[in-house]
Image (cartoon, rainbow, N blue to C red):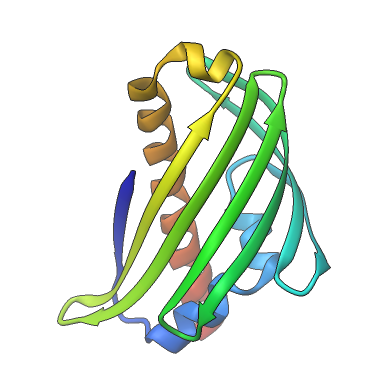
Length: 147
């Protein structure tokens, strides 16, 4: 799964510091109830997701690894909920372009349980909506921090 978003009028360094801010992340993650750092670059979160056939609460452990500030990091995610489990390995690339900072999320995702039976196309569509909303909220929060 690949998703891109262009952040206009924001420097790469400002975007990087925003996506490293746990308060901003908690606001921007859809349905986020808990987002706490349990050790350096390791977070525990609780997300309530209610989108189409995917409903329920997920607890997730998220690790940031291979960090190359302000251009690249990987997210390793393990999430569990009644609808199943999600394992994700996402590469996050930040790149300056003529139009702004291009953030590319390239993720490998595996699902089990009811989520797996729903089908990859539906899950991919839901994931794109969630990621798209997350990027829009990050952009809004970044602009709020700059102003």
